[in-house]
Length: 375
Ligand code: ATP
Image (cartoon, rainbow, N blue to C red):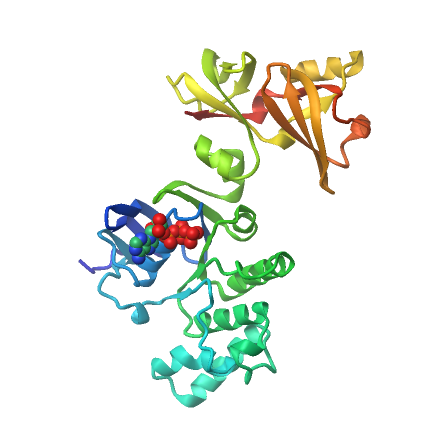
């Protein structure tokens, strides 16, 4: 059925219960996802979780075993890859080594039968867009990694696809160049108003660039959310651990008072959490606390009066101090035996400047600083 479903709020791209198996192995497992026009969407997940397979189905290089992919309300199953308004930029760029920059960019336009004059105009626009003026005659082996990446980008944008799929677009670049190119990609996507779907296993990259992130594991989407929600309200223990650094305490809910839960942790401690999304009825839970929510102070009457109000106070010994420029990370061995990490901005370290390994501290955080997750 290819009849368009005419709804104004229809997403540009809809993936409906799509699966793909290779032999007995399900690389993508009944996955559903909506993507809006103009979004910069990132698919984030560990190696082998099915990200590339999903992209290849969107591009038409793989056929789903079940489910549908709708573009603007139409099932695109019958549409061949080259006829889809979807283009893919490959991880290794897949440039033609014997063709010049110009001819690489013009390739798809020629094949689509565009007139020569129109091709020249379009190639000129693309070269300017990715700032490769003056390099039109060079071959790929005469370009740097960053320049090759731009040629690949220009080539995949030349036919003005509605959706651009980018598979690890920055993986081949060094860290500094990658950061600069992230900003360029974002600027380009905004300027063109296009929909970008980027695959990455680098969470910082996903958070920097994307409006929304889909976290994938074992062929399924664990959570789809904005970078902020993913970090501050992870949907599962797995997501909390995969996205950013986190302290996790497994335990059991021993009492509930409104939105306040008391949790007896496995290491014998107690943590009080404020949880608007109480996993009702569940008693086996994990408490997640980001390291930057954990404050530290030395023992003493003044600091005791302050940190007592935090409700959660855990005592222990500093085992490691790592200075990271903007912040300092302290590793603490709690008296219960559990480990805890605290990250403190270097502008807010106050009396902690001389805190070093072997010294006793009170680590404290409020019930609001915690997130309760089902186990
Ligand atoms: P990476 O980040 O390492 O590229 P990914 O998340 O993109 O990983 P996919 O390339 O989608 O993962 O692969 C998902 C799983 O499917 C992997 O276990 C892979 O080995 C398997 N797979 C992918 N393509 C094929 C194929 N053509 N034949 C057999 N197995 C395949």
